[in-house]
Length: 472
Image 1 (tube, rainbow, N blue to C red):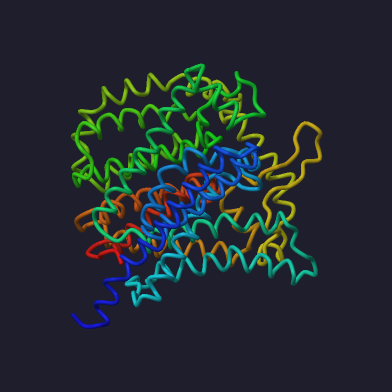
Image 2: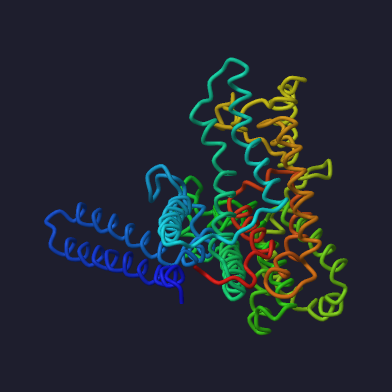
């Protein structure tokens, strides 16, 4: 073995000792400090800080652990508002920041040890870079060109896309083997099933579930209102429905490749099917119908099993029916849900009048939320996905999203026919991206909580970068 090869092979061992020893020492010191501190608040604060350092050390040593941790927990904590547990941040945002710091530290240490990343850039990456540019730099530039100055809310409104791109890069850089890809897929499906189960228990008014959700996820709603629809741990029926549909499609696509056991797939499938009506969201039911149609079209071999599973699906639908029946009761005399009438009223009175030629080209503002003139509400949300892109970045951002969609669909159409986890993710992502394009007519689903946090890791896995690579 040459001196360079010996140096590289010794890198991971040195990194392991470099991060584990200080990390373990920090935790031990923190525990002893808390035990002996005269001020418990100060002691727990110090323990939290040292635990944070230890987590960064573990992620630096084994970056894929951070990816597993974030993807498996994001749908369980993303519904907790900022300042509830952590100042200024939601728990998932804080966790992602810690994971990114740890992965960056570990990557830099490996780079100094002579390791080089085998990640190559593709047309999808280029399209994603353009989408990031026109989602962040372009809206701020358009505001400056018009002689104004971006507000803190304007800047904060641009961060969700940055988070999603960072998550995509994290998965690309840390999930390196077929085994790791398969494990990440299973974690995504299982976390989606947990969300579906919580939504189901929520709509059945299970007391302990309602209490926890009311305390941490929906403190502004009454206990009775919390149980009307399945917002679950995402704090939003819209987000819950997206996550359930994503997990269900991923389950069906990856079960075909034996990535999940038959019994596990059956149990998870029943729970996820029950979660679709339990979400109590019209867009979820539209997504489920579109996804089912695309699945049966793209995968004819699923048609016969789908017929055999009809009784189980019917049972799951009955269990999740309470939220569905309550939501259907909201239809107005015009034949559309009352909430959709309010949506159109908001668009026609507050958002559409702002679109002139200049704003269609440059965008209106980075922040798609307006202050409400009424006293019964504080803000008005822009509930139309394609208008959302025009509002933030005008035609350039809308074109960038269309280009990203074209490149994604072109890539996954080619990759879905291969073996392994990457092909399973590509098959699922092809279905889910078409569903996204349909639902974007109604809402900006790409940036809602949970949706992009699952779609972008899927995109990273579907690109096939995880196959035949070994961790550094």
